[in-house]
Amino acid sequence: MSLTNPSEEQLNATDILELVQQEKTATLSHLVSSVVHEINNPLGCIAGNITYIKDYVKDLLNLIELYQEHYPDPVSEIADEIDAIDLEYLTEDVPKLLSAMENGAERLHQISNALRTFGRFESDRQVLFNIHDGIDSVLLMLKSRFKGTKIRSPIEVIKNYGDIPEINCYPGHFNQALSYLINYSVNALDEKAKAQPSNPEFKPTITIKTSLTSDSVILSIQDNSLGIPENDQNTIFEALLITKPVEQGTGIGLSVSRQIIEERHQGTIKCQSVLGIGTEFIIELPRSSDS
Image (cartoon, rainbow, N blue to C red; front, side, top):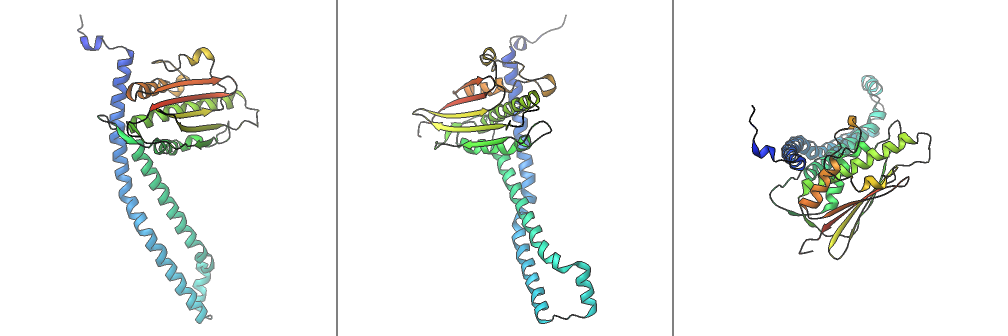
């Protein structure tokens, strides 16, 4: 006869889900912090030196131009080398390459900041947080999902941010809830594209809005997917409800999002959907006492 731990025996599905989520959150927090740290060291070196390199190259190109102006007829050996390296093309292309490198470094800097914002998993206390920063970081992390595929054109993300205050929040968990909701919208848009492969007028769109009431901050995530049947709208946030095909994962993201919003942040989340029109997730979060 095998012995069973009574504490495990008493755990229900929601308790197990929460424990798994806490462990995953802690692991992801450490991973993100490590990645950001490793990125920032070489990135700081590149970003800190590229300005100097641009100035040095500019000076060298100016010097070459002066030589060409004052010595228009170089010896044959130099003339041959100018032809061999295609000096005219080189002087035009090098500044472009340096600008591209500078843009790449800035892009990495944005990703690093987004990772740091996305990965803020303060488990023991709430902090004041600008949820617009959280939304932007999530959108940047999910950017590859918005690209066009074989079945649909690129997803247009429309941001309509209102003038809202910072809120007391667990930023990392809140960002995680957002990522699940936005991922759900992307999957729903993919499903519509599969269902309507011959509809050239379908332009997949996700619209994110924020606004303010007297006591709440409102966040809306709306897509133009096929929509959700009314009966499913009432159960879509239930724990362990499978919301997508097996090959796409467990589909518990919406349940985790509800837990994060309602249980961890004392907010509310609801789903509004019209078949053939799309789905909207509406989140209400309490304003902080000093806002």
